[in-house]
Image 1 (cartoon, rainbow, N blue to C red):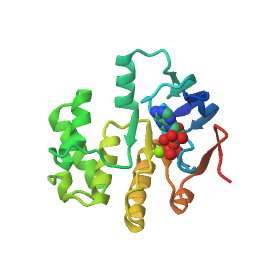
Image 2 (cartoon, protein in one colour; image 1 turned 120 degrees about the vertical axis):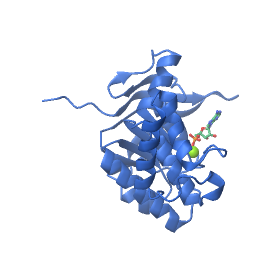
Image 3 (cartoon, protein in one colour; image 1 turned 90 degrees about the horizontal axis):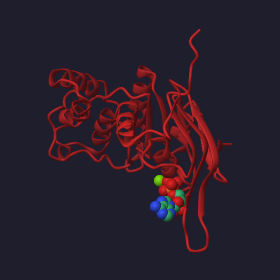
Image 4 (tube, rainbow, N blue to C red; image 1 turned 180 degrees about the horizontal axis):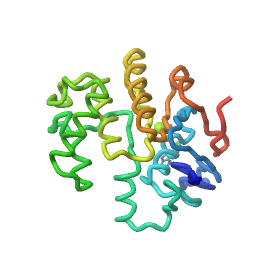
Amino acid sequence: MATEVPALFLSQIERYYPQADGPLEILRRADFAIWPGEMVALVAPSGTGKSTLLHVAGLLESPDAGEVFVGGTATSQLDDAELTRMRRTEIGFVYQFHHLLPELTALENVVLPQRIRGLGKREAESRSRELLTFLGLGERLDHFPSELSGGEQQRVAIGRAVANAPRVLLADEPTGNLDPQTSLHVFSTLMALARASGLAALIATHNLDLARRMDRQVTIRDGLVVPLD
Ligand code: ADP
Ligand code: MG
């Protein structure tokens, strides 16, 4: 029997910001694991450390102590090139604002990370077309971001995040900037994609209705990641 490892495992993570009157402690020996195929909602008030946790999980910031394992691989001792490779191939990140490149079409925005990884143009385009069609954007491939609605832009950003078939998808309030109906649509698409691909997803959201649709809900309390009650 193959031993399954968590897609992402945060072990004893500490993160603090120095301040004049002593460090501001955001995470204090926090543990958190997410398994392949699992969708977890991260629900916590503003300023509690959701973005910090996601940035640490996404290898965008180093923790002050502790270890981040991606697919069972410890990351604290990796050099910059190895970290970059891991961010590029193992992790997808979706922000509250889409951050699409304005001079590239929807298709080109999804092609780009695959080309950077070294995939051929034709293969990358074919995969991008398939992905965007799955996301309901088959008729919008050649639109520039400015020619897309907010919900469409965010779906392209999701396509870009999963373009390299990552193990883990991290999303920081991905529907925080959208109206309720659009949020639900974007979220449902994200959920269908996660289910179809078996990736693990950690999604920060203030929307309890959306959070309840996920497999598990966690929050940050006293610097720890704990189940939301
Ligand atoms: P959330 O995403 O839950 O709103 P954040 O992770 O962005 O919370 O921030 C958690 C806390 O850490 C906040 O109080 C914030 O002000 C503080 N913080 C975040 N980044 C920095 C930084 N670079 N320097 C100092 N304090 C920071
Ligand atoms: Mg935040």
